[in-house]
Image (tube, rainbow, N blue to C red; front, side, top):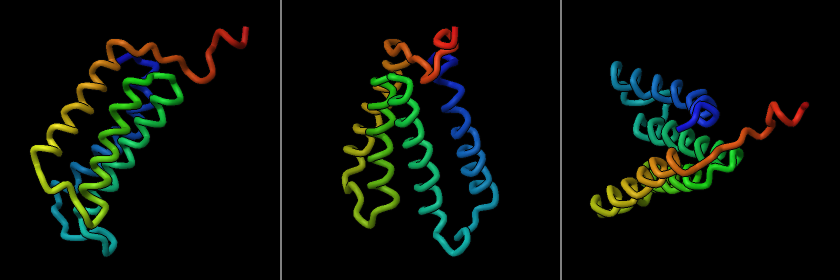
Length: 120
């Protein structure tokens, strides 16, 4: 993954990971009255949706597709009351999404929305 794409992803990814680590360390049953499983789901889905938005903005279609697929699966599994009942299907979809992100790291040529060269 190029630094142009890594930096905006890390801006939200690192705080999201920090929240998840703190939730693991302190193991609360709820955060502000919301079940911790929902907080984890919303945190991960928000990060993955951010990854989708960054991929689209930077014209990195493989990366955006991978993050979008994974965001959809996390939202279905953790936020809705319905879940994908078959774990194998969940693992397969997340594996495909991860593969898309890896392929995107190799094939995508992200361009920042405002290129420094455009101001010259």
